Length: 198
Image (cartoon, rainbow, N blue to C red; front, side, top):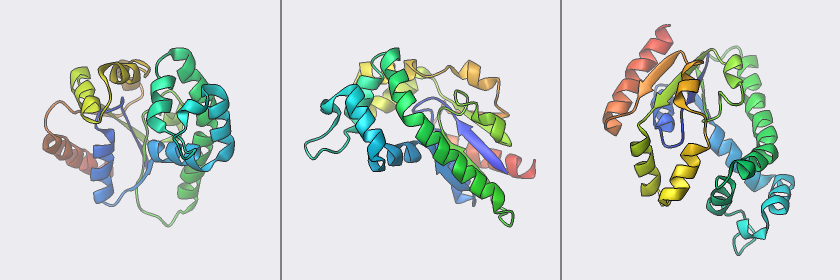
């Protein structure tokens, strides 16, 4: 079985994925693959520098992801440019890993795809189940600020993603992350049993 876990930035989807992983699921993260793509693929890095200028690099010539993010999420146009460069590579790698999992028929594990953009990419069509993790905007803002983002940077990131109401249309399960981390983990544990038994 292949299960997607989606939600907006700082919604708690990765925490839910971690609970599933502890229960034996294999997890592939859109964020991790995206990071690998921009850091290890020289063609992608070159295109990013050509598009957003050398200020996205640090003193050692490596990508400064926070700087890139601040520029890319400052406007819809910049976000589109970033997506056009990175997403084709990211999706190719994601689909490659999903295909590899499907071919390994002996595996009785559940594969979890942890990614914010499952709906935008229409990737839900390739999954067996989709879980949406929701969280109030003010809680998400606070979590991002705790990670070092400014109010504007946090709002830009949240504002450039699709709404939960759109994600709901494609979701089989919904977890509301409106309490403590322990409460979220407890909900995820209950949902794990439901997904496995279903």
